[in-house]
Length: 471
Image (cartoon, rainbow, N blue to C red; front, side, top):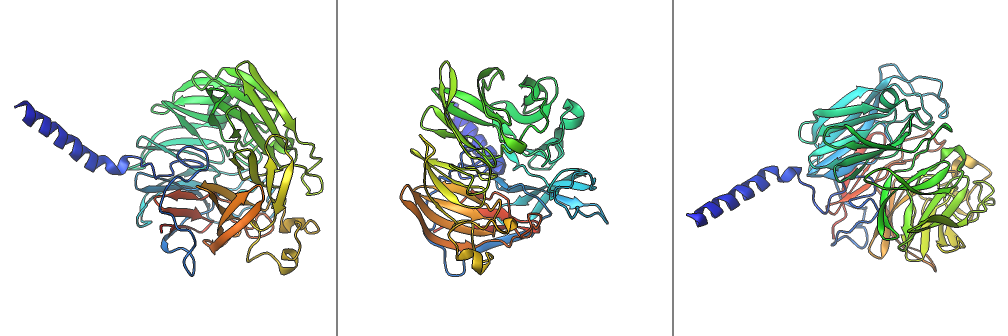
């Protein structure tokens, strides 16, 4: 009798797993910003060594609207956010214009991972008054049958991944008296246990807030920031100096918090011009953290049980190549391999630094240049500064895979390369998407791709594409 009961219980569990399997996350999913462990590492095996003739096989394409947010892939679904302008509305000709209110809607779009077919979508009004008003910035975060999204104007939503039903929501400006940042709310929410951690920018000590991920009720609040624009850096939990620490980087300082309570453990001042704290902090070794900014360069911080202090700070005098010293990144998060840092600098140079000192070992323009780069510009090894819009902010997102990197540049090209202290070795490249966003003065695609289930998912302002990267 007991044996029969056990068999029945096992059968019930198997049936439940089959019925609910589509809701469960896989180790090969990409459920949030920078991947499963929020570290920009792709850990799947059986990935191609070079691209086939003509580039990777396109599995599907689906139309989407404007947006800088990358896709998330989880539980057999693809989640992406976009923006649809109201009828007759147009974005300002000047991308820095914040005085023109542009009506429209933000959307959360859910697609079938295998086919790209639309499963559901949810939209809500979002009138923009931000620079570069081309859509939401934050990659969705998927966890435990729910997807969490943060729009450019501060709309935080929790939705059921099967139906798109809104389970709870917050509006950062209305609910917490936050000021909209110059370039919009841009820090992807972070799941930690039962908490959803967000950079809110609210008044009354609510720069950072932890919400109950199921109910949306606040659990704790931390830090005050009364100096205007509070920055763009994704919150991240690092195992540093033997402890789990929530690392927050705002334009005045790098801060370590207790993830459970929000209590400050340490603070290292770092003044950042124009609040450009976009790249995520990276762990170096077991007890150091590296950060990099567009105007002010980089800093390395050492964390101990009793606090933290800067090991070195950049001597950069500005963002132009002849003013930079180490790494002045504006968007892409650098990668760390052992004692070395690899990242994209202010005018598109991929640079290698010694982490311990910030010394630059080499630089190359190869990763950010491509088929759309003017021939006269390609002839030069240095970045173009006579016409700043040609290569200023030139960009490539870096994702590590074993001993190599996948770099997705702003011209829509995917590059396979090896990076080492001795130099840059390109293995192959292929065109994935056409750059459609022209707010930078040249056509670009500034969206971080997702790598999941031996595939790559990338979007521009017109479509999202899925390509196979399997051997």
